[in-house]
Image (cartoon, rainbow, N blue to C red; front, side):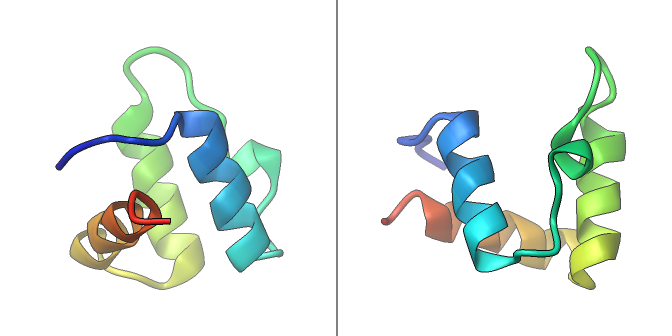
Length: 61
């Protein structure tokens, strides 16, 4: 996957698309990225595969 947008831009786009997400949902410390992604997956009620597709979709805008 080609990453064209910064993490900050992706967070803003996700928060715009899913207004119930908060900054805390995107917070993670070094080495805890997987935990944050699992939490996002659960909160959005999407599988990890669906979440990956969502991030890929964000790269197109």
